[in-house]
Image (cartoon, rainbow, N blue to C red; front, side, top):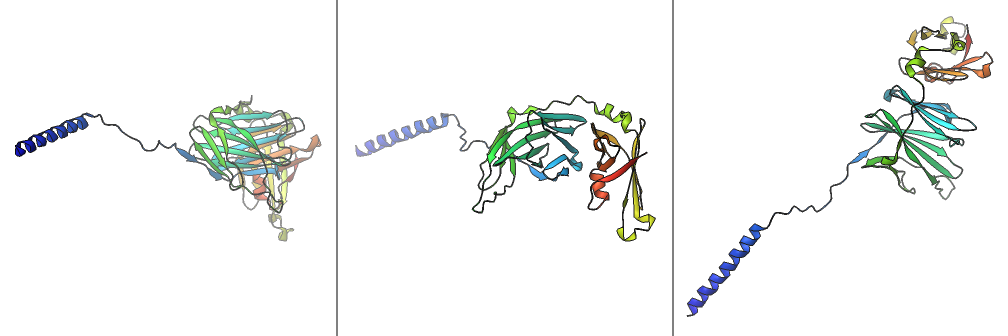
Length: 311
């Protein structure tokens, strides 16, 4: 009898295990993710930006290698920033003068976009104006602005900040380092800047009659050889209705075709084939002309403005 009981108990346990096994096999497979998929983080790298004009009050900034050029207009009533990008001029106009106390410019890039930050000085802090140059869509966008108070150390010196910029989903993340709060900009709320009502192709082919002429300016290349005519160099800017050209007569000859990239009442800004700029100014319509720009800064050591005569 005992043997029969053991046999019956064994058969009962075996039957339960079979049912449990069938139940387990019949369960549908469930894929469990222990962590959520992380968002793609895109980092930006700072690149050089060269500016002309007074310190903390430049007239324009550029990076020739990246074909980046922007111009600043500052006056008593309003300010504006113009971007010469993809053969179009995008403009951001302000009803106030946000840069009147001075500003710095910083340029960053990733594989498809560039970011420009204008760091405007306030009495007790800063305002960042942030722009994005979209290489895929050939547009310039204003992402937004943010104010922050300056952080002061025990010696009453402002804490320096270092930019760390990344893009995560629809957010541009701006980190400044120890002591400063992180800044987040919602990219979906950015606005495309309007295009200035100027056709660059027409600007390049037309020149006002008041600018037509030959402009000439000389400078000393080697001060120790003042009496040697070879130590002098002369720049010629020839502007007429048919052509705009630049020539350098010196130990090393240079020449280039020019194009107009900006014009104001008393100045004309030209770009050379190598990307360098030349700005001719008529000082208060007095008949006296000066020449400045990135090309002049290269030619003349410790001097950025060259006096011109017009023929």
